[in-house]
Length: 495
Image 1: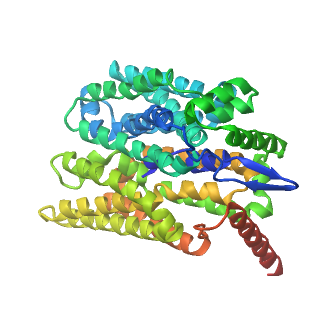
Image 2 (image 1 turned 135 degrees about the vertical axis):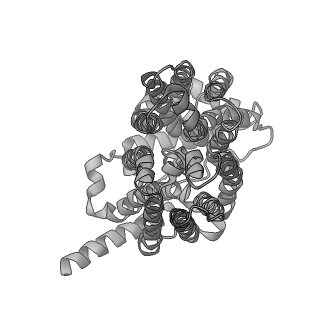
């Protein structure tokens, strides 16, 4: 789901953007293996500790997204909220996240990765306490907005920090921990929300903030950011701390310095540059996958899963919510193992087909329920459909669109493209999280038939427009997509 996501903003985008560049004569070669190889005398314990601290922010992200699902009925009952008021509470998280994501790049570049994470943790902590002490809708919304701003910033900064501190032989595995911890946080909120009051669950959300804020005092700043701002002494100290006292960091340090020199010499792409003909294909792929991901219904289902199961005929949403939480973490982990073995396109096709089938089964269950309220298998069919949807989404549509973002856009427009894609992501998330309850009030079956249709379009979109990027260099991918953009434009002119 988008919480994997949730996604979210720039994990794959920034991990590629931050790879060092090595200059050889007149050539510029993107190096994906720039970090230490773990030479004799090196140590990874500080890298592991730093990653653990950073992904406390990812866990916080998941807790925030998962909070609204199991608490809907209890919050509405205790505070007397209308459906519209609770929909605002659930969806306003994405408004805050949108603002946080847009500002995160500039904040992280200005005060460092650790500084940005500290600010994020502070906003999240204030937000959770505001929710805990809330007596009315307005204080709930302010708290939720504050948490949203914090996780919007964390969604950018955490994967960037991990990518910038990790040696090459661990980068792939450790960057996926970010996604796994988002899912773990959401699953924890789903499960604990069925047994704890909503106020206690809000206090649970403070714990990852405390771990993050305390842990940041124990770990170094990103060496690449230190090099970028000209803090050369601190840069070497941080890199040596991360690689171990006995590690030889000279080669890696030189590569990082080369990267900084070359990247600063590249013209930075502006938003209007993305709409040039040569970027047509990557722009369609990038924005299209994210838009289809969101309008396929994931955030509506994730934010309000508990009430969806009640609507399907269960006495409470606990069973379905716990089942969802149980399957999404291992399947999200599985996709990280399958992606480079089977490729992006097959997993996206399977995932989109599965979400289409799951939505269809859920829609049929509501049709049967409307026709015959005594039909005893309707809830089981709905549960099956939603679990198929979540399982399929976790296998591809949750994570792979962000990986594709890192692969299809050229380096000089990657940051701008990331901002646009993240804006589309959070805007779509807000639309879906706000309107989902109203769609369900209009027609439960119609809502899921609509989701099934969008997922079916996604299958066709992947089959027709999304390239396979497995086993190809970034240069090969981008050259082929630029050629595709020119060919399409030329064909259009001939017609």
